Image (spheres, helix red, strand yellow):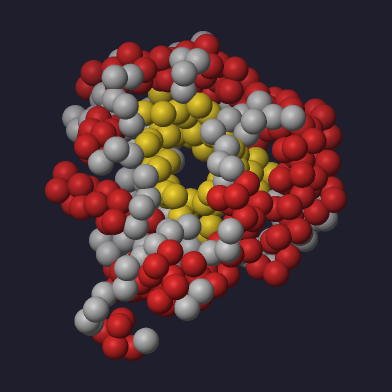
Length: 361
C-alpha cells in the first residue's frame, strides 16, 4: 500500500508559482472524513462527493456507523443504539431501526465515482477510556462488521474499517507497554481481519508537545520510541496522525511538525511494519468561544504550510472534515468553506481563466 519515496518527497505545488502549480496539478489532500450532522437529501450528498472528486479526493472515512447505549438486560451491559445508526441493523429492534440506509447511499455514490470508503466502527456511550465499555465495544464491533460485510460487501468502495477512538501517544508513553489503547486497537485489528482478511484497518493517533495536568508532554525522540512499540503491538494497516494545528492546545507548531513526523516515519521503518501513513490536516481554526463542531475554516495560506510541513514523511494526507471546512454546502460557514475550496482548487489545480480569484491574483 505504501507509495514510493519519490512520490512523497517531492515538494508541494504550494511552493511553486501559480503557473507552475497549474502545470503540476497535484492535489495534496487524498480524501476526508465524513459525518452526518448535516441532514441533506441524496442529490446534495451526490454533489458533495462530486466536489471532492473535482479536487482528486478519492478517500472517504465515515467517522462512525453508530454507537453503544446502556442496556441492563444485555449481558454486556450495553447494546447497539438505534440513534445515529447509519443502516437498519438486525442488532437493533425493528421499531428502533433507522428507515433511511445512509451507509448504502454513501457506498453506492462512492462506487459510481470510484472512491474508497472506510467504515468507522462504533462510538461508546460515555468516555471510552474508562474501560467500562471495552468488552461490549469489542463484541458489537465484531457483530456490526460481520453484518456490514454480509449486506454491503459487494460494494467495491468498501475497502476497510476505521477505529474512531482517538489514541494519544502521550498516554502511550506514560503507561508504557500496558497502554490500554494499544491493546484495544490490537484486538480491533485482529477481529476485523477475522471478519474479512481482505479489508484494511485504520486508526487515528494524537500527539502533544506540551502536556496538560497528569499527561506529560512529548519530544520527537520520545514519540519515535513510543510509536515503534505501538506499531508492533497494534499491526494497524493505515495510521492517521493528526497534525494538531487547528486545535492547538499543546500541539507542535507548524515549524515543529517535520521533526515529529520524521520521528514517526523512522519508527515505522524500525518497527518493520507495512503501515501506510496518512496525515490528518486540520483545516479548521479553533475558537475558545465555540464548540469544536462550530470552528470556522482555516485560511488557505495556513493549510498550505501544514501540508508542506508533513508531506516528506507520509504517504498522503486527508482533511478534517471536508463537510465542515471545505464544502460549499457546509452548514455553518458555507461562504468561508466555499472560499477555502476555491482557493485550494486554484492553488493546486487548474486556475480559472476568468472570475474573482483569477482577477485578484
